[in-house]
Length: 310
Image 1 (cartoon, rainbow, N blue to C red):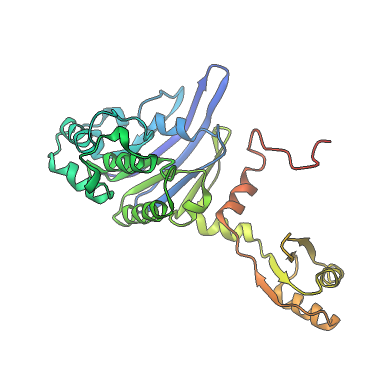
Image 2: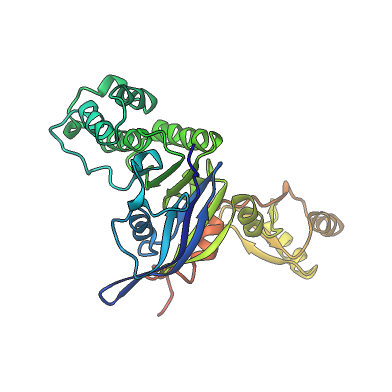
């Protein structure tokens, strides 16, 4: 297998007066799924287009296995990509679309049938792609990305249009591709979908990287030692814990989030005051929590919360 690493170094790109990329830098390593997330306009799609040589950067470089994509012989055998599931000739059958692509890369025609089976399209391969649902077009795009058995795979919003079964299939496929030693880069705005499969996350904002970390580290940071407390006497519990030096925030569903006090101290304070409680547990953060924390300042057009700015 060729070197699978995707390297993005100091990419800068302007479209007219808009600075789309402002020094974007990160590495996608083999053997893991790297999620690429950020608000709209953060530069994710532009970065992927630069990697594929579809847009030229004003500065910096993007390499696949140490080489520019455009210089690769049979590029589909180095990097498989899905940028736009709608970019198909609607009159052509899925099988013919893939056979044509395989031929262009010097790959055997049977490879088309192999990737159709792999992506669950075996039975639909002889149907015209114009009649496919969005989820089926995504699967066909992924089949095309895997044609050359590439060591690196790059997918832009692959969960779009997928039903729940399709989302589970996609997560499993991404994990399998990484387990085979491939470098896998997946852009998504659906944090919950990535949490089920990403090992590492690159968070972009305003054309640059604002976080580049293991998912486990981001989740630990977002949880930040906070505790969830449930009590039938929630107001009394809040009063006792504030007195004990805790920061207390109502959760909205009849629970409290408690910070600056460990679980043992919470239990001791409530017990000493005779306040009943039904749950004291370490708060489990989601990738969504971590993402919102990181992008709070980077979201260009964050909707105002009710009551803000009045």
